Amino acid sequence: MVRWPNRRPERDGEPNADPGAADAKREPSVTLADTGTAAARDGATAVTGYTRPASGPAGPVRVSHTGDATASEGGLANTGYLAIDRFTLVQQAAPRAPFAWPHQVGVLPPRAQSLQHRAEVDQLRAAVNRGGTEVLTQVLTGAGGVGKTQLAADCARTAWDNGEVDVLVWISASSRSAITAGYAQAGVEILAADPGDPEQAARSFLAWLEPKADQKPCRWLVVLDDVAEPADMRGWWPPTSRHGRALVTTRRREAALPGAGRRRVTVGLFTPQEAAAYFTAVLAAHDRQEPADQINSLAADLGYLPLALAQAATYIVDADLTCASYRELLADRLRKLADLLPEPSALPDDQTATVAASWSLSVERANQLRPAGLARPMLQLASFLDPNGIPATVLTGRPALAHLSRRTPTGTGGTHQSAQVSAEDAVLALRALHRLSLIDHTPDIPHQAVRVHQLVQRATRDTLTPDQHDRLACTTADTLTAAWPTIERDTALARALRANATALTRAAEDALYRPVPHRVLFRTGQSLGEAGQVTAATAHFSRLTEATSHRLGPDHPYALAARNNLARCRGEAGDAAGAAAALEDLLADVMRVLGPDHPDTLKARHELARWRSKAIVDESTDS
Image (cartoon, rainbow, N blue to C red; front, side):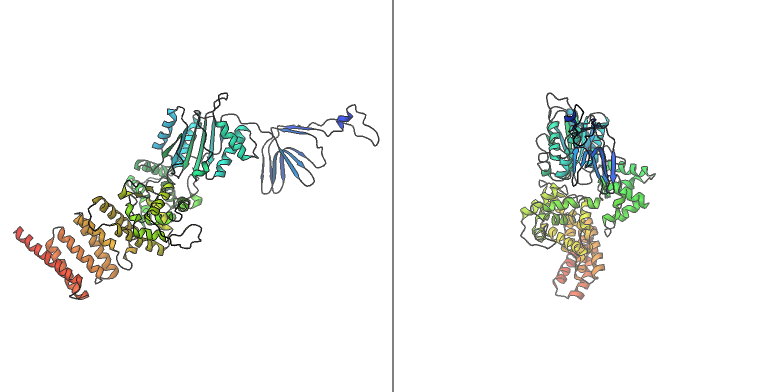
């Protein structure tokens, strides 16, 4: 509605006859309210409110309760009052009315298909049910892909649907500016704050959350999803209020995140039962069924990681594979993990990154933490070892420090820079990876101080060139042999070293035979024998003998050394006669290849005499 005061035009030299002529000479006012919506595109201008042309009246303009204006492709949209002068556009926004409760700010992520109830949800609900006067701010921490966002969204959606909150605010908190913008939007919608000053609007909203004696209590829930840096939250933590609560999700584990009135909730992997139930439900939604044993095995192959299970299920359905055939592809170490997951355009549940890509930003952030440039090469070493536990001495020994000294610091354009690295620096690199939830570092368990998810390991190895892969595998083997004591007094350490050697062989066996078999292959079998596991030692050296003979030829010194170890294991397993027969054949080959005076020839003679004597004793005892 527009109202114009009446007046008669003046003639030249004739005064206005209207009794209110003095008032009429003033420019008329405009009052306008309750307009609709407008949209503009392709350079056009849309106004929902009032537009004053350059030649129109310039009196007071009162605008209220205007609709929404949207623009695209170069259009100009205005809600309120737009004055068009000769060279300028002067905009005056209409006052906004605050929204009534209940009200939601921001968009919750869609509910994941076949969402599973998890123990972490019960922890969150238990904290709410306890009530009291303490602030209910819970910080959900965990590695990328464990489902933190879905847990937070499920809690928020449940509270909203059950009428437990009056105001729900969801903020994608990946940067400080995003946090500010999210709070500002809440201030604009809840308090009708000025959108032209987002910082002030955000501060006003946080101040409004503070409990006040004369204010009607508002039950609020603020969710800050995916906080990337603890410093981004400085000054933006929701206040203490017995009527409100906050949920924060992050991969970070710094001590600054939980604090006064804030409690950490660690979000882990699916349990085997949760993983199997989830995978079964997703396949059933696509009218697919698979044997339970194959589903259980595939869940274990994927390390019970929720994101990996979701994407693997999508890949299986899209490619029309069985769980068994997918497991065969996954077991092929020549295939990259990214090739066994859906393309970005086909990811399920509105996901934006594959498992293979979800950790890349975390690695980059960890690599920037002090000491800069060490986290990435440390993770590369750990990616070849046992995901269930790596001894601290393996990653802080001399070969590991030499590898870290050849780091490529961030911002150097990829050029290598050598600098002396200490064991303390190596520990700090481990802590940097731990802070980003890329590893679990528990120094109080020295023989299993570092744990890494198997898919993080694989994704890390996939980033290496073939040459880098082989060199790192040999460096990792060097770290193991350097940490291996000559005399194994600590059986737990020996067991952990053997498990890590097995993991290394599984990940990069070919590299360990180039140009010759690495010492770690022999040390692993010898450790099995020293531990009394003669059957396992015999099987190990049998495989090593076959591999060295096939790769290097039967007369290669390493092939002959493997045969010598195999014969000794047979004797220690109780077959003295078999050991003597094998050594007799070996001695003839050693003399032919190395000559009668070579140390290995003399060793073979000694071993043959020993086991012949033992076989005679055994034969006489049996008779």
